[in-house]
Amino acid sequence: AQSVTQPDIHITVSEGASLELRCNYSYGATPYLFWYVQSPGQGLQLLLKYFSGDTLVQGIKGFEAEFKRSQSSFNLRKPSVHWSDAAEYFCAVGAQGTDKLIFGTGTRLQVFP
Amino acid sequence: GAGVSQTPSNKVTEKGKYVELRCDPISGHTALYWYRQSLGQGPEFLIYFQGTGAADDSGLPNDRFFAVRPEGSVSTLKIQRTERGDSAMYLCASSLGGRGYTFGSGTRLTVV
Image: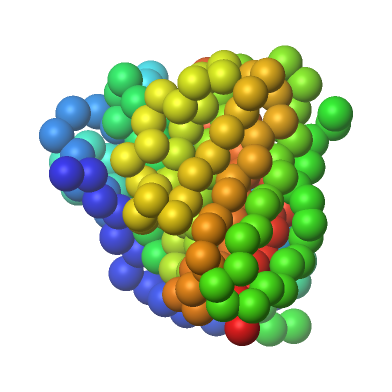
């Protein structure tokens, strides 16, 4: 069965610092992978997605993620965090042939000035 | 419309009552999804429509939950005999066929 693990429940960084949010998945074949961001009380916004091809994916708001098959990981990165990046971040995996997504439990990002 | 619209944004109901949550997808999107997000958790899949039919309803927790999409556009999630455990954010999303969809802002349901 597919699953997603986000090991870090809460991360705090200073504004301008670099960021890496971890995501590990479990799936037998090549998955579809996604990162979403959610501000308090809001829906989810798609940051980026990976289906195939280049393993380094660029997204919106300066985010990128790298698919590493050997590590079953899809970590999200940003070189310089802005205060407006404070939010909840969710990694999700989808199986080929289905449109259902399995989400991780999320990582809450706090940014200090 | 420009985005996925969900109404109401907030709903407070008494235990045992019936509620309906509405989702208006992006115009032309054939696929529509419902997810439920409990506090501190990621969204959990409930049901997926392709056109008017439910292609996968494996996530509906029990027979108190039902969803329809009669004309292949607007969808309604219906919950009968609500319980306090049904309190959550209910999220709707739409797409042209998988591969990353657009979520609405959700309906926060509180059962008191």
